[in-house]
Amino acid sequence: MVTTVDQIFVILQHWFVGYLPAILQPFAGVLLNVVAIVVTFPALFAIAVLLERKGLGRMQNRIGPNRVGPYGILQPVADGLKSLTKEDIVPFRADGVVHFMAPVVLVVVVFMGFAVLPMGRNMTLVHMDSALLFYFSMGACTELAIFMAGWASRNKYSLLGAMRAVAQMISYEVPLLMSSVAVVMITGSLSLDKIVEAQNHYTWGLPHWYIFTPWGLLGFLMFAVAATAETNRSPFDLPEGESELVAGYFTEYSGFKFAEFFLGEYVGMLSISGLGATLFLGGWSAPLEILGFMPSWFWFFAKIMLSICVFIWLRGTLPRLRQDQLMNFAWKFVLPMTLLNLFVAGLWRFLGDGWVRWVVCSAILVLAYVFVGRAEMHRKHYGPRSYRYAE
Amino acid sequence: MLGEGILKGLAETAKNFAGSFVSKERMTTVEYPEERLPLPEASRNFPFLVYDGTDWEAGLRCVACQICEKECPPKCIYIDKSKDKKPDHVGKMQIYPTKFDIDISICMSCQICVEVCPFEAIKMDSEYELATDDRFGGLLLDRHQLAKPNEYYHKIHPTEAAEVDARLAEEKVKADAKAKAAAAAPKPAAVPAAKPAIVASSVASPKEGEAG
Image (cartoon, rainbow over all chains, first blue to last red; front, side, top):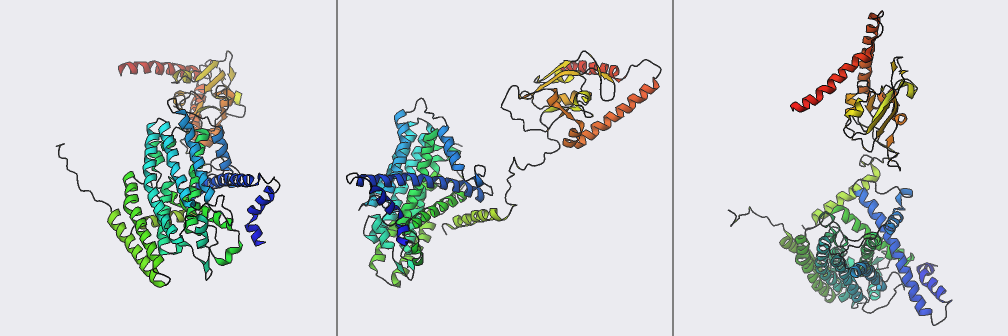
């Protein structure tokens, strides 16, 4: 019974594919999985948008949308219909083809990432040995889509937004990769299935997730920062800072193309949350051994939605960074910490079991956090300026 | 240490989030169509015509003198005088407007018509839900739509309405005394007496303008 619920989607797929001729079966199986992904994540996107609007409202002591349906739960439907029926405007001087392609590329590339994420026991679309590499190469393509959008619009705000986006995403791509490399070092594999398997065992009923080790905790924090920047989320939403750049790279987009950017952004958040959960939070494994009776896919999606809530919480709390603060933070704090984390992960591996490695690794990381934080991130106090030529 | 401020901020928003479910005072939103704040007494929007008694047509205070029509800066008032006379609410014979239209799509809510009206017949309304799907006909209000009872005026602007009522009562007392004193004489009542004053004032204003 427990395994039936756990494997319900796999069983359903086999049952359905069984009706087809043998030649079509592998093809139909993959197609069915793709359809499931393409349906599930936009649905989660709708829920995430609703959660965001209600949650942000509550954080600002407002009510949030409550007009469409009971407690406003049909608001995403209304939003979707609105964006579908709006006029699609393409600027006269824009590069029509690239302008059209940009949102399509973004959405396609974002959905490609889900191909390798293990969403439950036996629920990975493509079992790839270099899954993590594939994921990051797909993630890097979103920069291309964003730059296409900014460049093809022939609008200074779009271009500025796109240039900011590219600068930011390339800067944070490095720590994002570096923080994941520690996981790969410990697991000894780039395969996300193997990474989940390596975390999916328990001592005294508690899981062996990587976040519960010193290097894993720091790695997760740095990964979270880099992931927030990578998905252009507040407080790193400079590329679309509406107070400065209208809407950044999608200033010139309207109607359904705008909705596609919106979808791409949120599905990107869901996807990178899924990767974070897989790398550090044990993927689809249950948080306690006694909770193992619940289906594995439930835990995966619960972890995703939890991190979406944290994204929303951060957005409700933090003001937007300035460009120089953003860059300083990436290169002077996050990158050194992730590099040190690689070293610590190696120490952790070679110090063997026991309490020594806990003390040594934690001490190194805490000291580094305090001192790097103090040295690199202190506020500069500017004195009164003197003008040499103006007087 | 780095990150302390972020934690403090997160605690603050979490407090807001939880508090908004618990305490009503935190929520400042007035959910408009269901609940609405009372309007301040001085609020004003577009003019309406005051009538006394219960019959709007008989009780209309307006005597179609057309001062408001002439004074209106954007020219949004249109009045047709009647040929005949009919008794107003106190029984005096008066001409009356057969047509009194205000185009509220043009009206700029300046209140000049109210200031110049010698008969306290036109006053400012505070009605603001005037949206319509017919932008020409729907925003052109005729005298039936404009006519509202004196009780309504008391409801929306109580202080002002009380002053107006007191002034009217005083004038009525004076007029009655005059009528009694000149009981033998034929009847040159208040209306002809009022007219020269109006002419004088309307002549005076352009002169002031030239001097300026």
